[in-house]
Length: 333
Image (cartoon, rainbow, N blue to C red; front, side, top):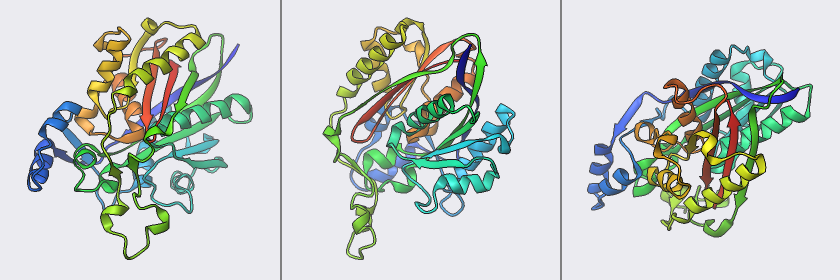
């Protein structure tokens, strides 16, 4: 018998306000910048933007968590662990996980913490939660939630960040189940190389200068210094190939790939390098904008909804975080 860690339920949340490409084209045109080619290249159409007065990382996470609990038919008191992934937190003290714990009334979740590994954050959190459940038989269910406020932290003068980033939350209920066959969480593969550690920074000024009155407001936002990202596709291929060899599985056995939704061309280039058909991935960045760490999970939920994947299928989550670090996660439904 296998102790499997499976996705019991998934929930996503998107703010009601939507902005289209025309808004960003007009916004940057007033600065003498043309972003039309950029957003078309990355694959954008609309973005969901949070209400700054009423929504934040915790409120969005709460809504996504409620949906995950509902779809999994799990009660809040059944949750043993909460891991809250975010790089746009509402608070540092107390933790966002604790604030979410209070809202959900998950009275038996005593192991709770925040995790920040930028845009690979949800995959990192799923990896950690899965291994905790595997190693501790007193724990049965974990809530992993990610929340991203890209529109809040992006400078309105930054054509790449502001015209592409949006807001969303995603939540997954993980459960340890005993079954006669191996499925659920299989394994992960990570790589970190800080070669572009200065390219993405938030807050750009650093926390030590965040409250200095002489620090310009724009330096308190997310800063991107553009760089060539083409190397990421080959890195993803190499990362997944090692994972496949380790798990004794062929790339052709993978039903769907759920990549970072930052760049549609990067996903397609990666599949081309692997000689895998473009029907093997789900892209939702056109509908929701780029939503950071939540984006691969939102793509997974989309595939569940349109029945692109089914029980027994192998899927891979693969994404990249600032700096950079990359992660590939193998899962079987």
